[in-house]
Image (cartoon, rainbow, N blue to C red):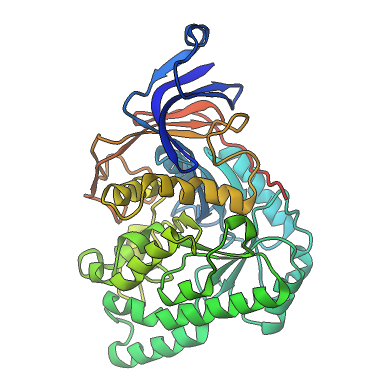
Length: 444
């Protein structure tokens, strides 16, 4: 037995002093007062006085680059980085090489997960213009969702056939997660900037090329299709104020259409391109301060539902160039929880809301079996945070295979001290232990 003793437990909207007992990989008891002496005597006691105890974060959108793109990252390297950052479960995207667009390829990816993942894992099935027969075979109890690119991104998986889109929304009986950017708008914008700059458009024009209008028009189309066919729709990495109008304020359990915000869209704005350059080039793009603030307000009002990363590592040389040449995407999964806790300390969101949007909401939204909360009987995926120990991001502590971060030089006021995965101590004061994750299951 392991007893995490005298922590500040942050869970289900409350923060309170307490202790958590772990047995056989599960949470067996939560103590709000004194712990019985018999339990103390029989347990391995971890003194957590002054520390915050959170459920492990669940990231519903990562690109770990395996198979086929492992020069950038792989399941082992990126999941270990996740564990060091307090992210205990991840859902990985299908735009690898080969793309995960058949049941056979999906099962091969799950085999890779069982061999290499140091966090709990699931993988999306990818939609294309011609794989409806494969999509119909997906088991919703064993797979997190189907990913649809409704705007070009990496991997050449754009679904631009309207009849196919309608069929996907009408016939796929599980969560559909969409990347929404309108391809026609982006192409027109690219043509305009190429006419002026050729291939060397400065990075500051990226949010005007991958524009707010491109995002809104595609998201609106997705919502219209979901409303028509009563589809379970989840729109990924929302980046604009205008898109928030597409979502309702209602309990998560009553929503058919949900929205995700990524940490970089809450942390950076277009004013930061002059400082960070292509290090903050993502698709969808980082946009205005007004957009950033509106996204945070959307979370606080429960119009938007989860916080994730869209973790997408590239080699440093691939990030060179301007708005049209540099690769889009960056690594964030090791530091996303610290980023959000820093925003909580600055008063932009509460730490209880951070836990809700990074732990509880993804568990509830995807119906993940017994994870995402500190509850008796749940898997002991837990994170101990020291709220008063500064942590600076630098080359010595970056665990991504690509070995860079857009946050290098940033000092957070919190440190991830320990991460427990399925009741085992997977990360301890900077040291990663050889603890493997488990396949996520879904109560659908």
